[in-house]
Image (cartoon, rainbow, N blue to C red; front, side, top):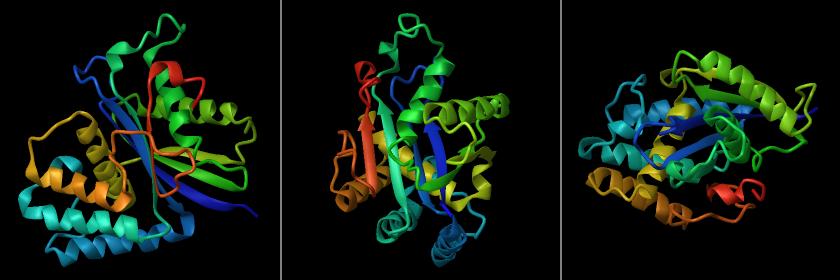
Length: 237
């Protein structure tokens, strides 16, 4: 019997015409049987720092008054061998030439999700993919994404990718953790330096991962894996 892996996915600046050039998408993944234990531990860390168990962790909420809490979360991620991260950064959406490749932005978006997930997927496991609800078209896009992902790995019976479903970020501590890490990755690749608290989080991730956050890691990196993608790399990733 296959072991089941949960992948909690988020995306940042993914809209085609949002005036932000850098886009990123990524996911935190863990064994399904550890998800409740991990979620409870994150709630305990919230309480330890005087926050409500229902406090929603978000990169946009990082502030000097809560910086120690967020640093603690980063350390928890790196100290827990069941937690892993895979992120893809697209440095400049303005360089995309969808017409040249006969695709829409949505079709490219599905391809990039596959590029992000394929380093995680193994035929020896089954996967449940959870995606943060972003817009009213989410249900339609998630159904299409599941179809594209399964077809990409010839998983026509959906034995490997069991489900792709939407959840709200406040309902999942692990999805909140994905938001935090992905936010740091995007911030670093945008070259931003407007918040000392956010810079502290990025510096801690750099220290613990031993990576710059702005360069591609080895494909085999399992704990903290990054791909900085450029258009000509699509067929090579």
